[in-house]
Length: 472
Image (cartoon, rainbow, N blue to C red; front, side, top):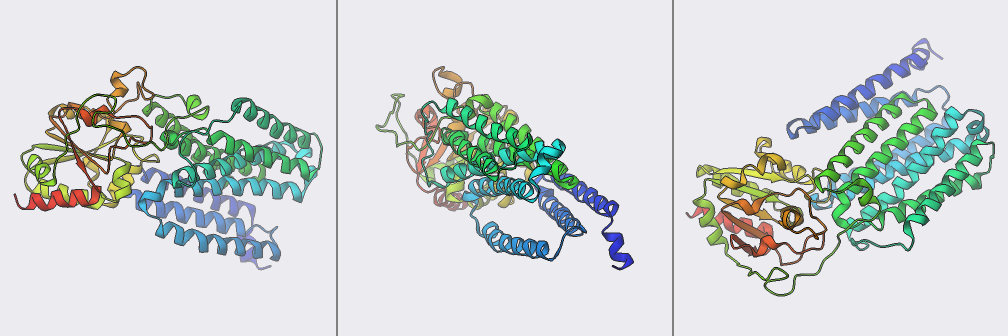
């Protein structure tokens, strides 16, 4: 072994490389707080991950077979991951996030199993290794299978409505006790691979049964919760493997996911426990009758009439929702806003924390369309603006604009902070039909006397409005 090779394989050098790596993770994460620096942040974090991988490959304990397995894994991951990430539609980004997050948890669970098979006695002989590995196996397996269910719900492979499990809470508690009990048996000296498989199996069933009862309206909270689980499982594996980069990266993901989960739950006025113990929302049929439960009347309009209203406005607030993502209308919205701005009309965008199907969904879509970041207004800020807004243009945002959250005590969303678009002088709602949102409840905003409905594909409708504006 040459002197240079020996130097790079010294533990101090490898540790220093890990420190540089997780330092870049932190810098990259900090830059993700702004769309203007997010791309740079992603690149910095990616370089940090490359350094972490290279530092791991310098481990002198690796042999030829290990390098072969690593090469095969990297090849398979690259072949699957790169095309998937490059070709995914923005409408499918939430389920892609759920799927990739689940893969992380599954990888941690497999690492824990591989470490156990390598030296079964080590887990009981050194509890500082054994306890984190057992926790990594349980949490990682729950995250993997729970994320798969979230993916399937978002992708429409299974119903987005809550699937009630008979005595579900008791069943989940029993599964957790089985997983923990098997883990304790291993920590007490058992070297049975069957027991470790039982840990993974019980946690897998628990992950499935824990997410199935959660409705589509709670998916932003579920995704951030599972993200936190994956981070915690990675940190636990890092402790067992004495890998500093894995510990820090896992704790960053776990902490940020936990904070985000809390913020998402508060944005919906729901406790995290109420979400995890049984969510609401799913596919809902179209509202029958012109007046629905409200007894009001739906007033439809045309692109030409909407253009006239917008042209004479001083301030327009665009309220994006999942409908904009489905129609991929973000670029058309940006072009319309440019036309309005040329006419001296101020355009702002109202962003609700849980609009869409994942945290930050609307921010991502609008950033893709090069909407200036200073035009994106958070809920607390924009709610002060609606009283002096001439026109609010709601594009597929159902539940986050529903006044029942303020006015109807028996509504499932009562108490949830919403965007107060009904305080605007005029409201234009772009929708394909009168179907309810993902919470499965009717929105009385649609029957408000100040509201007009423009039915059709949002992208086409916005394009027609833009064309009409150009003629005024």
